[in-house]
Length: 146
Length: 389
Image (cartoon, rainbow over all chains, first blue to last red):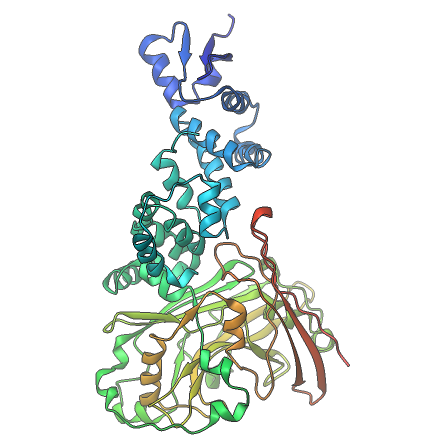
């Protein structure tokens, strides 16, 4: 009996094939498969193709369960760029792949450790949405850290 | 990139160390809202101080303003800016007007709680909580006139020769270097250096009535003694310097947290090196080492809880003129791990004269270097260069 294959479609309409028993590590995909048998193509409108390729690489890993922790850690370590990691974490969140999301968030947290306020803003692409007065008030509250 | 999901932000923020979390909280209102979550700070507290995981300590912290405030009060260390400005030792010992302003009546020994966590090479070896001041209150007059001390373990140095095993022990499996004989250790000081650099101590004092808390320790040892009083014993001193204005006839009081270690086994047939922690106690004294009595000590402790704090470890250490009669002790190298103290960049050198317990004189040069290279990951070191003559 041949293994059943699913097709995933990224935001930019690229198609990726993956064996169903591997794809269902994602809780989101598992639920979809359960509901409608996932007949044809599963669209992932929020995940771009580069990120999806990474997710698929992760899902396709051949690892013994006891080596899995190390593998996922190494996997995100090798992709040490903050923007890539954020995309990966977001995709892992959408697809509900907990281990991958936790590892990506951990890596981002490690990378921004010791960053200054401005550096954090830049790294996470945060827009400051407060008036200077409001900002000063919150800085005063955390005065001990500066 | 689209705006990230707030679950994702929460997941990232909860993995940060306190100082970065504080910076991140100031970046935007979404992060600010997340950082108000006590849960995040509770997790940080239990990472930093395992004793805060205890239910009684948790409810104490909640009653004095919560984990976020507790972290902000106790993670940065006390800095005595006056000491940095004094140019001569006489200045900090000089008399200053003081009066008994009756503050003592408002301070009771039972208001204080000590929360102590000791680490050896990043592993917690002791977490203990002392409610009140031991032996205070039993004989009221006796306490307020006698030298003040809080003993972490139920017994003190005087009765430790009865074969009572230490509550806390370190062995080779904890990372202790094997010692083949005390004679060899006396010569090379391997074990001594290892303890001095490897032990991290936090001693938080809380006043449950005034709802204030502060860390009276220095995380790393500020000075110590090899082989005192016997060749099997080592002392390490942690602590801080507190302003004593209006309480005592001198400006500052040294808060000394002494830890006594004893080598109970050396490498032998069938035995491995083992060190017992015989004592950990907090005492207050003036710069000459004279003890402060219980009554005044409570007032000084109370004052300490509202001292200035700083995250600049270099300055904090500089504001603690420890050592029996010389300059600074060394600060071992450490990396910021999100659990230990975080250093800010600094660079400073000190020359000093040190008298060892054997009477020999060592002249050394300490060089402090701090590096701050956020883009290559956190990496800060304090390195020390010794030159012996």
